[in-house]
Length: 192
Image 1 (cartoon, rainbow, N blue to C red):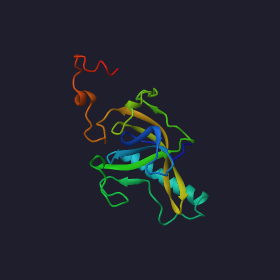
Image 2: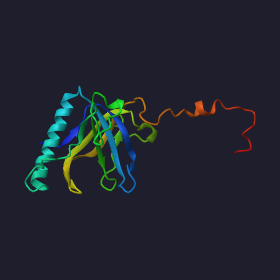
Image 3: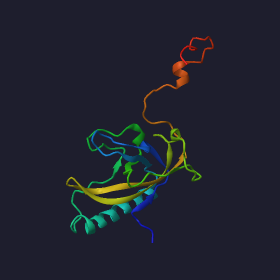
Image 4: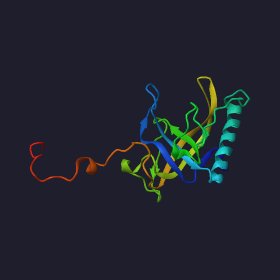
């Protein structure tokens, strides 16, 4: 029987992609592999599987971690991209019309496999970036951490299905735009 806590999404857009190297969001935090997923609200089937995984994780937490009771305030890992973040600021425009959630894992536990649409490993790290589209596998789990109780998503393998417009980085020019065409006038000959 399949584990209802394990979900493979339909196609999502990926943001805050840290799949090739672990990253700490704040100084002093543990570095983790992570990806934030923007799931279109039109993908009702994936959302239903995610909701079922969250409920199954809450039941597991009730039985294994939370002393037989699902806490009245249980941190939910999925957010409405049309709403506001926990700090009260709105989500970015790329989140509109989407459910937003993050899956992560500690490097000592697992390094996520990242594959292309044909399940071939992606070796070139430049092909993995915020803005690409793909499918993400994760497992919902209950936790208790510094007094907070909730459900998190443990990251599994990731499949890139197609390229998308890069998110973040602002208006960084390409090298060709920044430096122009190379001039063969010998002006750089002493630099090498």
